Length: 443
Figure 1 (tube, rainbow, N blue to C red):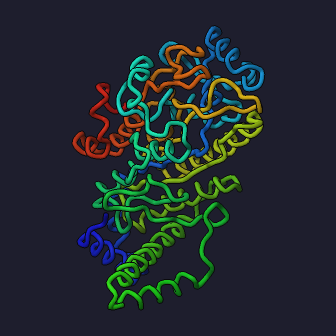
Figure 2 (figure 1 turned 90 degrees about the horizontal axis):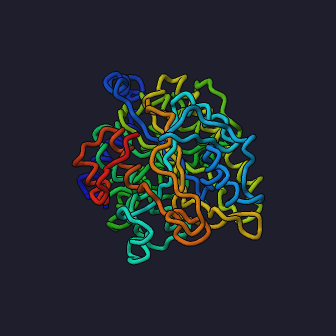
């Protein structure tokens, strides 16, 4: 919850920014930016709701393991080895490839600008199949449920009803480095990821994308009503109106940042996802308006619930993801932020290794995720791939429901460490991290 002191602080900050916008843009922000530019860091979380099929995103290429993959996936889902995009070198002595739609991602990997995290999922503590079968409390709550597992990814917990997200909890610690806005900027639908104990993300509007700006003049009308109601003798009405005033003032600064970055030359795909990433890049380009040295962005690229006719649908979704991320990385290069912005993906869960009867696949568990940018030492498959065997040591059941070998907590704590959080701060943001002797993933 936002306490009164925090609320009043943010109201005054946002009111100053809105009431003196030209002064802020021309004088104050340039001074703040001069101090922050060299230390700027940002994280962009791309959520893939529906459950991306990681089994066809990252594929083992060594002969024996590829044959196991092809046998288990069958003619319905297996991708021909000759059409896969090979990844350069070996990771942990093994060769890998990616889906044919991921041309940009494979290129970034080969340039050591991207890595994969293998077989990752929500876990409270490390556990083997035998341990899980003996103690069901080791399973995440509501395993295989879309909303619950997505919430677990975005909260870095195994609770079915988390109250905060790991992005929000990180933002709680970054308020002194976030300039005139909260550290967390939300370019997607409502998500637990954007909720902290004291901070909640501010929404950015992406014209032409999934988010649509309000009609001209609407903002001013809403602000006028809210300012009037903020003087109400009814405390509940007044406080609600004050929050609306705060939001309106913050939107002034956010739109100024977006406008200041509108000269970005990189061409983005004309898709919803492309427009959202373009908006995020514009806000980063205009970050001098905000004066932030730390920012967290959230967005989504959905449509991965492929129970039917997966082949074409999955290829199209990955192509959209790849095109958007390819353009975004080019924009970071243009802005000189190549090493200062880290992008990572989340998804509800993997799909079963075995195809179903409708040429799709069903809900599973451990999945593979992408990390790119941020100056990381890429070109690696981090973590441990599952043993490709139905009913084997990695399979919770008999369909290829992989038991994670790396926890969401470890990956996201690695992102927090990249952002500069101390060990004590990591322990507070990621309370389950203490259960994993290997600690945060080094990305």
